Image (tube, rainbow, N blue to C red):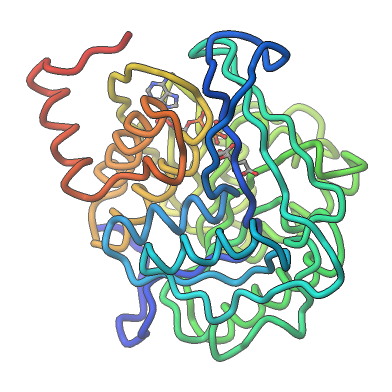
Length: 335
Ligand SMILES: Nc1ncnc2c1ncn2[C@@H]1O[C@H](COP(=O)(O)OP(=O)(O)OP(=O)(O)O)[C@@H](O)[C@H]1O
Ligand SMILES: O=C(O)C[C@@H](O)[C@H](O)C(=O)CO
């Protein structure tokens, strides 16, 4: 069992707020993007990917966001609906804002980068008035994603969602999701990430993301010190991700848990964090032990980094369980 108490009377399992964008993943891989001529279009955006992952695992999921009033915006909403994700609090921009594009470069399985086109992005124009309190109130879990804090009015929409979520007894998850190209100042970034993190029950980030948040405190000694800071606020679980070296979770009771990693035939590295979060949160919501939930997230991550896409590749529960079995009997080895 884990210590989180989910309100089982709620009609929705999981909602997220934040970025809905389009991934354009290079088809000609293992070369720089200058040599890429074609791309495959997928729905993207870290919180969207996590929500798609939760829905793929059978959770009743919804989303709070804003899309552009164009073909890409309609593609995104249609994809969410086809994946049984409630879109009743996804609003359409009427100011001519655009859909964020994430061009992904896959130079090698371990050397990937994302070229972001996020000028006038519709997702950052979500206003507080467009967040429905009754929508937030219906969910067991509410996830916020850090990039939505980058600009107003999205920033204020997130903080209002945090207040609604706390008022209505949701478990609040903060996926730090620091994307430098969306911010103008590292100081401003750290201020808003810390203000948000203080309100969250579960905080998930990479070592680098926590380092960014701790910029005003000098060098924090270690992961345990990083986690310990947040238990003075709302946090019950703090997860620090370390890529191929796995993850470590700390709980308010002073325990720590190492996350298992699974072999992967890596095509690209990105998408690991989103699939890890989906698998981890799914496990917690089933009442599993933290280490079991971390392993489930780790296996989900290995599946997604072994795939060309992020959203399309988000696995079902059976796919994750089968993957774990195949790894354990030696059928799958890293390459
Ligand atoms: N090469 C790998 N092999 C196996 N597991 C991996 C690998 N890379 C990542 N993972 C798993 O995925 C988890 C999250 O990956 P990572 O730490 O890279 O997060 P992230 O930087 O948020 O991911 P993203 O690249 O999607 O932003 C890791 O803690 C680990 O469990
Ligand atoms: O979150 C983004 O904007 C980029 C994602 O769309 C992309 O799938 C990725 O990097 C996932 O981690």
